[in-house]
Length: 563
Image (cartoon, rainbow, N blue to C red; front, side):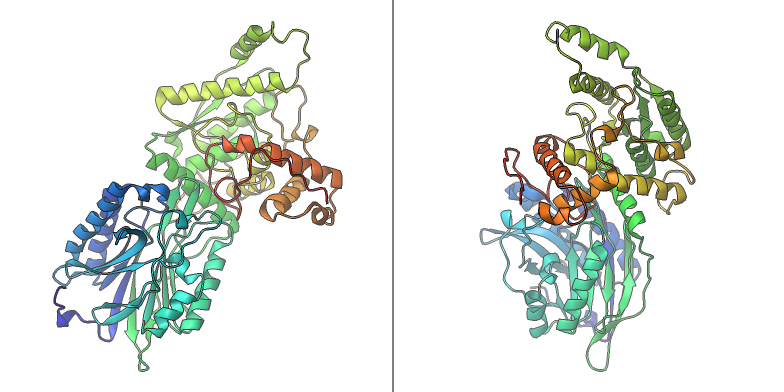
């Protein structure tokens, strides 16, 4: 153990830096550089300690990557190397990392000070619900005691450890003076309110102030929104960091006459309302997926419909107009209005816009299949050939120039299978995968009236009003509308919310005023489309229960609720 320098002991004042950074899973060197940069900035502002988010060295969630011993050992080696930053009175570091000890793998936080790993704490309460699956890869740590940092007794519960009372109660009873909590808490609607309620409960029970440091950034389907904050022991808000933006906040703490610690008033970032938060989550998820996976930009089919228009707007807001390429892929059923709407949308967004008619490939497929299909009536088969021809063309453009294809199907369509495998489902990522159709319309109107700071797209109307107001249609046959085969989206989305988000029984949905036969039909469509959803690209999680990590249903499934 390194001998402590008495001159560095925390007496009546403590300066804490909270680092809200955007790590990338698996980029150990890059993540360590984020730590180094934050440490330099914190040192320049006289901080005593820098707090980072959960598993910042590995990135969160690393899933089964942490089962690879070489990966974990590299993370541990990087943590030990980072300890050198804390020599000669420099700020200490609290960094999250996977850690192997006595043959067990832990979700850990390391206190680095005086050039060494001074202490380790292991996550006790491992979440195993919704999008979380930590019991699969980590061992549960023992109930932790506080860490002595330069004479200050710090409790370090890790993320889920504060969602129940056991860990914080143990830390309070064993002498912790302040709770510093590294988190990897992903975004979904109204998530900030949930976090605040949990933190208030822990502060009330423990009587201790609590600092909540959360991760920022997109990781596959999850978006981490930051929003780090602190509550004093009297439950008052000491500071609030922004959602969806990285940053380093310096907070000043002082010991009171009763030996409790309080935080001086700090910056209070404005938190976005629900519409802005959902929009920024979609933008951040798409942006980070594209950039962290090394794509130079994106390409998408711009049909003149609402879904592709809103995806184009999100792409421009996240990546900039120069990295977005739109393709109009018209066929005989594409209306002149759709061509005009798509062109107007591309012009409003300032993106490249090309026409690639699909008549030749569609009719070529028809000729090739004419013998096999002789005597058969035309049906959805021919409609799907149009969609698949578009998918092939978009993927060819992607292959040739490297841009990732953005998929544009909404949650309503994906719920009931109103999408074509290897056609409009082609692509790498879908920013609106977890938005119901009614939410898509609502957010399109919102974006036309709002452009928050940090977005790269233009102000004003970026989605022409004619796209928002016209009757939705896939334009795969003459005079087709979505409501030929689906109920109005207001009705469909309410039924789907009951079935998907709330797992309600048919009889309870019927009490909301919906037709029983329609509910049965929607439930049936929901179940039989599971095989399509398994083959869909990832997309941003927005609702409490997205398709993929949250809702895991069997493909082969004969259950139907006939109660």
